[in-house]
Image (tube, rainbow, N blue to C red; front, side, top):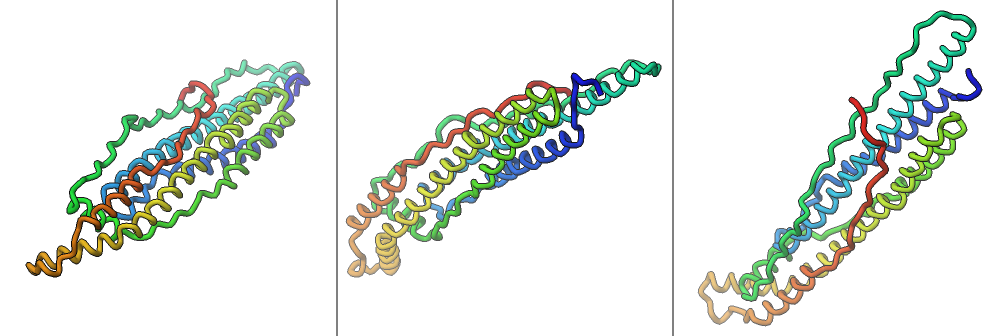
Length: 283
């Protein structure tokens, strides 16, 4: 092989398989983020917060999907170039010895970039806080009848390890091929994106969902007694028993305060920067 082009093809191929494993890990996180966990109760505030957080999940899911595809495209380009470069170098060596062969036409191509999925940017309308006791207490009954919410954080250690793996692959690639600086730099940029953009965004997402779980469980406990009183009032009203009807004003005020605090829950902002781009390709 010509001394100006040194390629350890087996090592490059092993690096490529390792990188595709990282791409699969990123894509898997994106797949899970696309599955809506749903709201734990059917009150208007829980449904609203569920939709807000699911939209944030979709932003991350689509970013992961696009990043995994782009990382795979970079491996496609690497292996196509490496294979043909090694072939060209070998044929050149043989031609120098006098072998009569046709010129090699380079023909490698890379899959076209995946189209970005779009998510509406307009904010979701926050449910209005009703001032009437009956509507407020009805919503409190729906909130109180929900199930307790538990939250399990994402295993971000896998993502941090994936970023380390990409940086290690970049180091190995520089050793495996003399022309490996550009693809190695691409892997390093992806490693930084996974570590500093995607993983940090997943952590922020987890903080938002943990805050929701805490606020929901607290609000559910706060409205339990007002909801019980209102159900008792409805039962007495159904029996036309005026004497047994409990007063609703205080119960309504208490439920309204709990729902207001729950509805105005400040959520951690979830943002993820753009992943590195390989460029155009031909399918």
